[in-house]
Amino acid sequence: MTGYEGADLAIALINVILLGLLFVVAIAIARMRSLFAIVMLSGIYSLISATWFVALDAVDVAFTEAAVGAGISTALLLGAMLLTSRTAKPEKRSTAIVPLLVVIAVGCMLVYATIDLPAFGDPDSPANTYVGTAYIERTPQDIGVPNIVTAVLASYRGFDTLGEVGVVFAAALAVILLLGFGERSLSATIGRKDKGGRG
Amino acid sequence: MIGAAAIALIVAIALMLIRALRGPTLYDRVLAVNSLGTKIVLFIGILGFVLGRPDFLDIAVLYALINFVSTIAILKFFRYRSFQVPLMRRTVARQTQPEGDDV
Image (cartoon, rainbow over all chains, first blue to last red; front, top):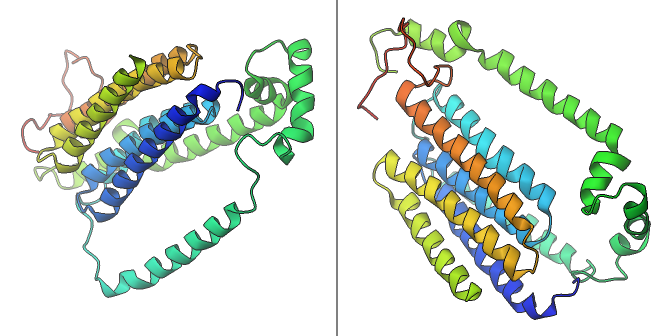
């Protein structure tokens, strides 16, 4: 890592604690039936994982996770919950076996794949040898932004980021067109249909 | 010193998590999420000092803003059952008819 070896133990401890919290939240989400509680817990999950991204120095990913995961998607899920019931159907125990086996198999494969990965912060890893060094050398003269990830995203790959913004805008537009706003929105239509009923 | 603060914050986060998991009413959960967000903001600030990079405070401020807005959105949703109602009550109340105290 970059200079602060004394804090390595603290970093490892923080990572373990945050991942443990994420594990607890994920298990709780899988076991709960109240959809509102699940929406709230998924917001918590996003916040904690955003903190973990900050701890891993992936600040831009953490920004996205906090804005999209904890902010927008909580609101979208609440809006979707308005159109359905408030609790999930309990599923049968026997049908849950096959997905469990699939998940365990995929998890084992992923753990097996991590054995081949270079160590965390390894200077000889591909991420730190080829293009990365060129960016690190040139960014101070070319762009002058202290955060190199920001320089890459907003300047070197400016057109790419512009295209991504266009894609996200189109997706948001599609959601707005589907759910609607104001008088013509789906929820307002449903609410008008059973007037006098609940919600 | 900073370590003690970090540990205290982690304990507080765990307590908020327990409240969000077990909270009997919806408002317990909303409050738990909101104050857990506050603890996360403080924790990111502490983390910046642990890592020797106090510029994480900017991120913490942004998280505080997002947390505030999303809490307002959730509470507004439960007050009006919709996001399309303005927060300030207009003089001519249209068909909104807030359903106060079910939930």
